[in-house]
Image 1 (cartoon, helix red, strand yellow):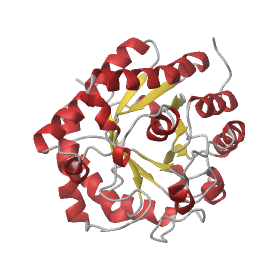
Image 2: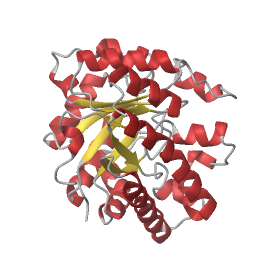
Image 3: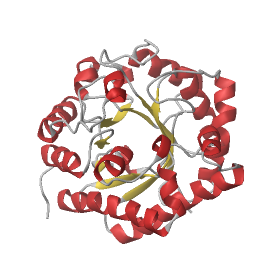
Length: 314
């Protein structure tokens, strides 16, 4: 059974690191082919699984040096029905993929002991992470995500995290699906350079609406796939919705989503500058206990974040 499902340790004071941008690192820096950023392909071969192990081991070393925990997200951001069908996977195959993703991270959790590890079942948007195309109603979003939520809830995953969501109806729907399955879930919105969701809605409004529609069911919120310069100035610690944000997984680049889509190269930004911006955010918002990266970030960025936010303990 899950180690932490009813008692998530990152809800206390200890800092938990995540990894960086898995897909951008593996594609641009390791030369792997991941069509549609579908890292679940790696679970289909021994070589792919070893690439995942090697990837996470670099972050485990950082966690050991700085005395933090780790939140390990499964490589299942694209392992839902529409994306799976694009790659020839039917419903049964997707259940197996989601299950194997968790069991692989269980193996790593044992390997990384005594570092505290939370296994998070990663759910991505039905559509493009940057563009709110083909927006669903709440009911349709719940129905769409229920299959992957159920597949992950049948494993030893401790929680779910829906990453790179860009409109509230999908966030509400996946939260309802998680509640039906009895799974804790974190909701991570992405924002544009103006700090608003791609729909033009403010981050504060989105969090308030999701909380209102779900009786505050998400265990916390995150911001991911945006640079701190896009949203940090909006996070007023006196606002209740801001206090619901416990995690940041920022991009390395200050570029907009549109600019990133057009890039042929990888913009890795300034790791030390990114670390400093996280330290300033954590100074103002001490509830931020889940820190990691998204597009363009790798172990260098997470090391800089840990160094800026924590003393070395070993």
